[in-house]
Length: 391
Image 1 (cartoon, rainbow, N blue to C red):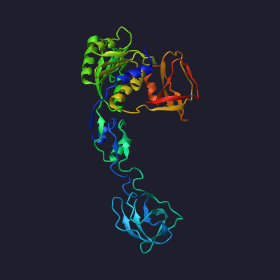
Image 2: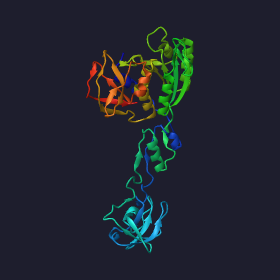
Image 3: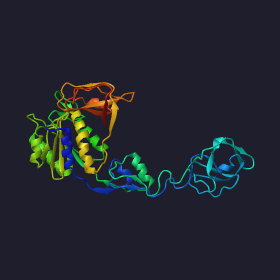
Image 4: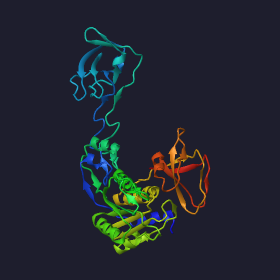
């Protein structure tokens, strides 16, 4: 049995970097950028009004001002502003030459003869300067960034509509166990519904993978072997839940070897998730997880995400926050690194959710993250600052 940190190091040492492709930017959601992206222009591209009002010279604001133009957003001003002149201007419209501020419409009185009078004592500039947000040539996004809605906006901003991204990792999902049935079926006595596979499919979708579900293999060598062989031929990574421990029907590790995989580790000092298996055959990989659903969820978070981040070039993929513990966390055994689901309370502190162990899948629906209890530690005291991994 190896330590968690050693397992992570083995995964990192066996990483591969997948290829790239160009996609239409909105189709790049949840993909990983593999190039830096630079702005092709200044933003704003011109001095523009930040308010609806009147563009004028600050030195004239106490005087009656003649309105010489109306400037709509998207149109170039037609008149230069001279002494005691102004242009009515809309938010986002280009500032006219000669004007250096905008007086807001709420503080203006309209007079006869197409004139106005500013009623305020003073005014801010109420304009946005050319290039104050972005200058031409400025780097907006870095290679290794995951594309979310925020990055989509930046790609649109600079017209970079076909970014270079990592190809989608292909990941196959296999569940094992005579007791497992699909969710739409009603379990008989001794049966349970398959939550692992659909949980994993959703987790993969969230990180931009192409997932393939191969169904449930009964605890039979031939059934499991056929699915492993098929999934290996069609994917970069296989995730198998169940059948990886030491029981009479835990057939997966031996069948992985039969299919050409070299087992790089098969036990990790973590709770839940001790009998986690990681194997490789050239550029094909497998991660086998315990069948309990919290185990598979956490193994995905701490191992599969690490592997896929390396494979796609995703930098800084971990979202870990230091937070204050509102309630102590206890455990009886301390020989493994324990992962505990936690939630953020109304005071902005974290506390454990009700959690009965690795089969208690519904506990995760209440959790905002997971925190860990180090080996040798039985209690984390209330008020202590702990690391929380967002899930």
